[in-house]
Image 1 (tube, one colour):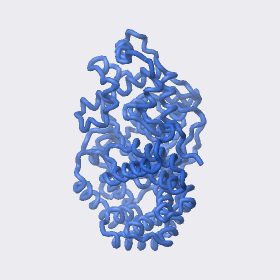
Image 2: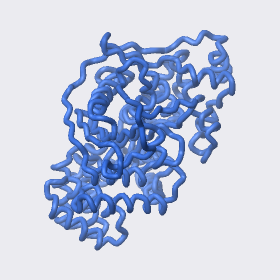
Image 3: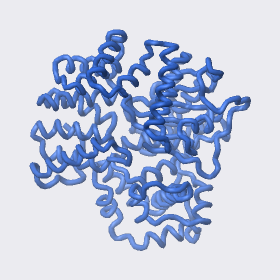
Image 4: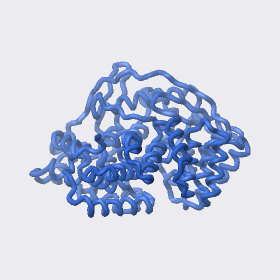
Amino acid sequence: MTCRLALLGCLLACVTGCSSMRALCPLEGGRPWVEVKSPHFTVRTNLDVETSAEAARDLEMMRQGLLQAWGGSFDPPGTVEVIVLRNRRELSEFTQVSIEGFSATMAEGPVLVMAGHSYALSEEGADISTQAHELTHYLSQFALVRQPRWLSEGLATYLETIALKPEKQEVVLGAKHGPFLDIARRQGWRTLDELWEWDRRGPMSSAESQQYYVSAWLWVHFFISQHAERFERFQKRLMGGEDPRVAWDAAFHGVKDLAGQVHAYALGTVPMRSPTITAPLLPVSGDIDIRPLEPAEVHAIRARLFLMTPGGATPEERLEKAEFEMAQALKEDPGNLTVALLRIRNTAEPEEQLALARELVGRRPESGRAWDALAQALDAAGYATEEQEAARLRAVELIPDNVGAQEGLARYYARTAQPERGLAAAQRALALAPGNASVLDTYSTILFQLGRCQEALATQQLAVEVLYEGTPVRLSQTVHDTLARYEAVCGAAPSATSPIGGE
């Protein structure tokens, strides 16, 4: 999970007439909620209908603009769920910390959560930095499978200054981040060695965290401006799955006194060229589908937010608040699908989980998510049977772009020693989530069973590399244990620049 801190006092203002600091359902005095679907986004929000539709179109335009950072042919698959609350105060009910938005990978796929402020991205003067920052995190995982945190945050901040100019049909990327540059000049910045150790620092104060974000932007801006060819070589090596430190040493071998160079660059001793990219802004599809959300659906969204947002609340506190929202949703709609799925996921007893899942499929046989829940429940209960296979095949048929469903099918075939049947699903899951440790672990298992030992080892090494802070302990242990087993069986690793995911 990544989150965008509310730095520099850039507070997102409440829409005029705001009467509540909570994103409530309409029956509790909240504003109406809508769902807006576009080709690459599903936006659920309590902004007004006109603004919501414009938000979806503008997200499509922003996506098209950000893709130009990796070249015009770059176009990742899949869709993104976006939850937009009207303002940062509404978001703070769930996070209890001062953030403007965050991105996460959930069982259903990627989710971006943002605070808005009338939000029409193409309007002159509108602040779109948070939206661009979080969307960059999502898109960059397809371009750069391995990303040290300083690169991930530095690129996201570098690209958050995006300027969309639809009237000229162009986009400008990489403009100077004035506020961050001011902070760097007044308060200094972290060394590159310190940034490499960012994830190992643990919890930080707001001031410390701010300095790391500022420093990441400064170093990335400096590299693109002063060492563009080397920095591009570094990224290309990461695209091939190479270890970040190895890729760095190879790309920047022989370069002296980077610390002195960035000092001169930040303080203006060396002219700070703005490494901007001006590229065509291609037309985007105007296909938009809008529907109002029922109160039960709003309660389900609130339950999910309590469970997945960053912040200091304990799991018990989160679950208590989520349970309240789920109970409210079921009062409004006893058959609510999202709540039923949350109930199944949060039920500890496997047989009870299985009974709930079978009941849900009986009520909602057209739902791929229901079939996927049944498959997971069968797996948790130890039933690696034809019933589980049928459930997984039905889920993939109904929701082919769902990462969890594709990985689940691949893992089923791995567990039942049918790797030939699982290869296509594993590759599809990897295409949808190339930086997901669990997906990589499943794919490596399939490769290992097929006798492709060196490819399995390279893939498992990558799975270890992409483990992030907050990864469940069980998954982290499994990934490391599997790597040790492959190293014992497969011997030396292949070249770190070997591509991952080929036939």
